[in-house]
Image 1 (cartoon, one colour):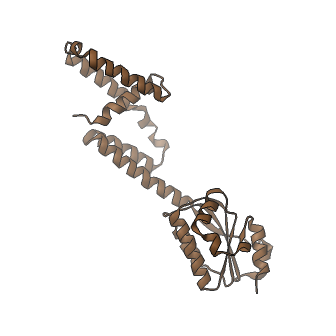
Image 2 (cartoon, rainbow, N blue to C red):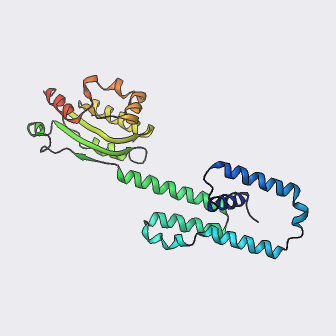
Image 3 (cartoon, rainbow, N blue to C red):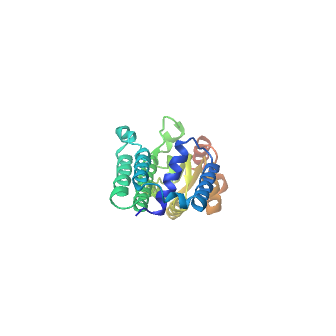
Length: 242
């Protein structure tokens, strides 16, 4: 027995293969089926079941897109695992179960990929000569990627490398911060304050800047310790060195 989603997917695939590109195609298709059901049902009793079975097998075969399996070698293992899992679960169990598992696997893969792209690195004294005479007093880190619940460990690692006076974070390359990431950043600010280290934030743009404003970071960090440029931030930090 097919689940309700099967009919929806079959109609969608038929529309796409027929060249449809807008939601209007789905509306027309639904209205056409409604007319057939309302006025053509008596005639459908004369259609041989063998003919209907052949049509269904043909549609199912075209929906399979079997050529895609030959392309699996081009993709990473997580993508292969997701696609094959959905395929076999659709056959063995149910389409709804397959979609649920596929979404879960895709979600886990996405979290892993994004967290692996998020990183930080210490700024070199070669790039910023001002740091050469203040080693140990100032620490400068550039952060890349996304600060979210899957990458808060990044900020926790920075806590282990605090300098004695000023911590400078270059966040120009941070494209997104979620609530968990902002909580971790506020926690880092609290740790710095408890240890007498001043925290300077540089390069916040777009969504990270808005999240910092909503999260109250700007109320906890002095105005001159919020800089738009990392170079200017380092100069400000050096001027505050005791």
